[in-house]
Length: 109
Length: 115
Image: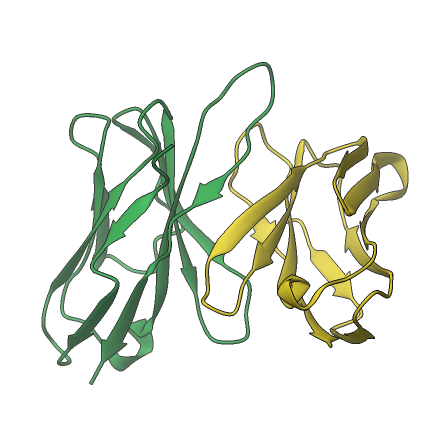
């Protein structure tokens, strides 16, 4: 099955800093999503982005499907951005997603 | 807007007991997924339904695991004869298939502890 790798595994930022989180995947994808798991365990869907670029407020994401990677950009980080960011992908026409191990982000005030 | 609801939030059971978890998806969503997450890992796909049809169950961890979605609305996940290795967070998610986009929305999960 598809392999999903995320980097870096951990990231510490000062409030207000920008960051880039990377996701590499091993096969062509029909479905790629980014999630934020907050400290209470809730998974929040950030983007559905199998290709192209999207923006939502301070967050944006780009997937270059031909090169098999996706990037999540966080600008002007806030302490509430802390948590684990997951990239997840599927090669089929469904959401049988394979998740990466996640990137743990800590934003310090 | 009511999100995905899971009950109970926490379940503590003794090894060998059966447990059942419930998931109520977002009302207009036609697909429902079950995932399992262990500490320090990303969620792992278990099974999914489109309406009442279970489209894949080969990833259920053993024959002790079963899931139903009897009327295409809520779903239950049952684990029989629980083992300590079943301790994990069990997550339910739902989606609406439309125009080639399938965005997944997760519930808060049921944390299972097997003693």
